[in-house]
Image 1: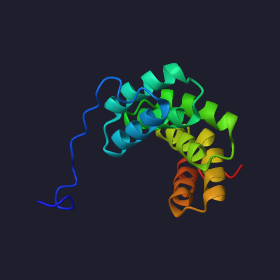
Image 2 (image 1 turned 90 degrees about the vertical axis):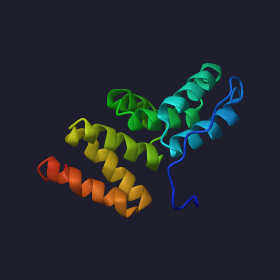
Image 3 (image 1 turned 180 degrees about the horizontal axis):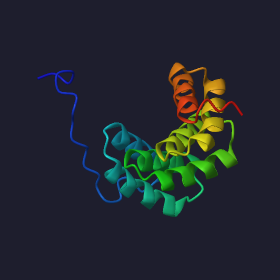
Length: 141
């Protein structure tokens, strides 16, 4: 059976200490998140973030893991800090908008979604703006 016929794969085994360095932790956690294994990614990320708590890449992955686990308050808190540090990060802006949207905080989500759409030009980001504008009652401010 080819990989295309069976796209679901079990997450790889993470051995203790294998992802101790932040660079290795980033690659390992990213791979786990792409495989939809946020719990295992958290284990790797938390260990690495103890060593480098300000590592932006690791924090972005942790926010992604929070979103995957529907820990929306934690995700929006993490993303708000990341956006505050770097407002030019289109992914963080969009992810923050999505986290707020999923909490039905549409008016708060719109500025982040609009900015992400303007920065990226991504059609999916533009569709998110339209969706949330409708949910917020066509709020234009």
